[in-house]
Image 1 (cartoon, rainbow, N blue to C red):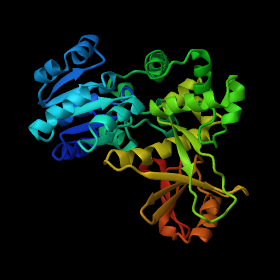
Image 2 (image 1 turned 90 degrees about the vertical axis):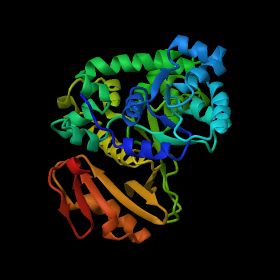
Image 3 (image 1 turned 180 degrees about the vertical axis):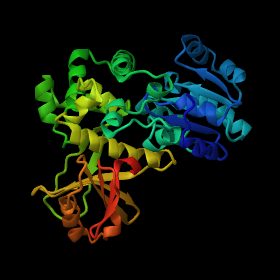
Image 4 (image 1 turned 60 degrees about the horizontal axis):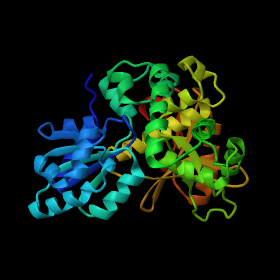
Length: 383
């Protein structure tokens, strides 16, 4: 099944202005397919392949002579040294749109790019399929619990793989390949436990001390392992908004997964029906909504500024999207029936910030969009 990606247009626009465009994102999020779709006349070479990797390592000039331009190079972080040779080659030719580079390990890739391609490459982050993309392709799951359970990795939809079959293999491959490549983690069983514990804390304030105690490791180890999860696009952190509306603000971030289907697998959820009664359904729904707002920006080449707000008295706004001096605040509720109480946190925050009702929204699991005096109510279907 051919699933259109919103980021195609942005990728093509960037290639006109830069000699390189670099696509980062989780493994199997569709980076190579995006590049092929945007540039069907480009050759493709993967440095995950041992022969190609050896060629690029041992004979970089020969590699570039073989692929002098119009080439997609996948998993380029596997041979970071090739970037210096590519930079020299591109500087001599002065062409635009010469190479599309992809990589799924953000830290290693960005470190190599900063050293060799700074100012010469545009950056685009591709996450798994968005709600918008699935809707346009006619493959949206039938209800909100199914969308949470399936997640949005393309293989689930274009190859018809069930999550119960897909995610355990994905996790095993991630632990055995990506993690070992990124960091020498000797105790994979404890690392695996940390990943599962993180899934049990979706949408919650991060407590590193608690994670360290439950995993039986030190706090610095937890810090290091969380960095690995973040750099390999498994989890991300929503930072608190520090505007001076109150001095008694929560200062720790909230934890989310880049894909709710992966989180469901780690939580041992086997069906959408199990999601509907799960104690973490609220956190999973919130995670799905935040993911969609993140994807909407990234697919258009915009790096969004997302945060949340909570004070020590328990007043909270789930998500704040900041653009310049403007902010839009969202409350995210997994209930299917609207209640005026949904606006309580937004109304309190608005009293401090002065943000008008037009910039305050509730996104809920119901079907009917509404317009209230406190702000707009959006259904998950048109979020």
